[in-house]
Image (cartoon, rainbow, N blue to C red; front, side):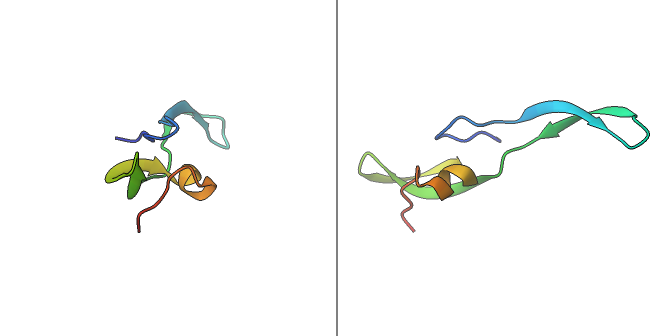
Length: 62
């Protein structure tokens, strides 16, 4: 489950190109962490990307 429950960031797809220009499909996953946060006054566990945690969108509960 590589999806942030705060911003909705999920996996992205593209093509990996080597030095000899051989192409292969690639998948980039966001850096997701399971954190305990306060949502509407109640503490709960949710999946959040580190970008949301760093920017303060997730009120961490410790």
